[in-house]
Image (cartoon, rainbow, N blue to C red; front, side, top):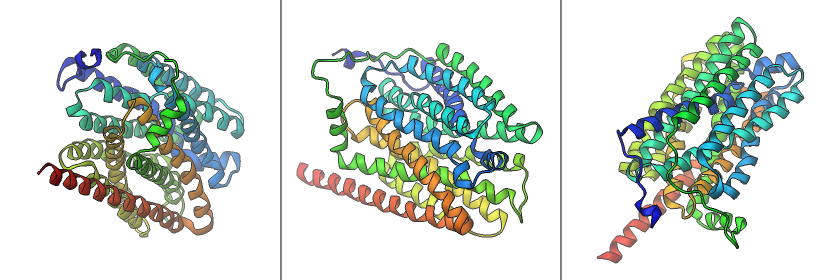
Length: 409
């Protein structure tokens, strides 16, 4: 009864804007810290004399840490305090970014990245849970879209900052400056985010964590969405991990700063996630998810063209499709799954970041053996599988709707 009577955050209220702005800042810090090393993978490869796939482990260890931590978050999500956990995650991850900047070996960087990923996992799963629990259900699709858009801006800011400072100074100065900025944001996050109104459940006798996992995984539709998340995130990390190698090499010979500027197309993600999140509330998640997967697939194939402008257009279309697909899939899983929202969203993120680690690393072997066309064909193949799964899930949802409609009549 208490849950039914508690008030939700409604659109355009003071609490709404406080929450939106604070979650936005938190996303800037969390995803900036997670992805700021991506544009300098070639720089790390040169400094530590590494192959592309090995250098990409600087990204993969971070996403792997997030994935493994999601298992624990999914297990104890019902008892984690949302605001406190997210703030601690942001603050300590920022300190680790500074530690990475002064690391003397690549092995130490990997260890710190793993720890950083584990800590950062506390933010995305609980942020989505906070949205699902605290906001008016009628605007959840829109708010998740805004949140995912903020993720894109966070990733963009981190990449731009470290790329520019790497060109003018060094990657170490760039990463240290980013870590200091994210530490300030963590403080602002604690004071800015409205306190949750949903009470955190105390541990009950017979509370079975394994049964909680099983109850979610029994839902075939949710498992399909998790598999799609695995593919789309893996493809996203893969294409951005290795496109820098293409841009800094002949015949393009772009500088590190210019390569960083290419990441400004993340701004398309901010638009895409918000627009497509709203469209999913209106037209259904399935149709919009299929549309996003098609955009990603077509964009990937366009990057196989030789002219630089074609690669940029393809990357832009891919990016627009990714953020739309991610925001749609994320909100869809929360809508159709039964049970605790934090567990559902953290399990989504578990598959999401495992995909980033696996597909993101495997793409490096294709780059070394077959060049960029090999990477693009690899990404295109797995995206075709994601599209087929999305189409099947959409058709199943459509058929079930009409079956229930006929039963009513």
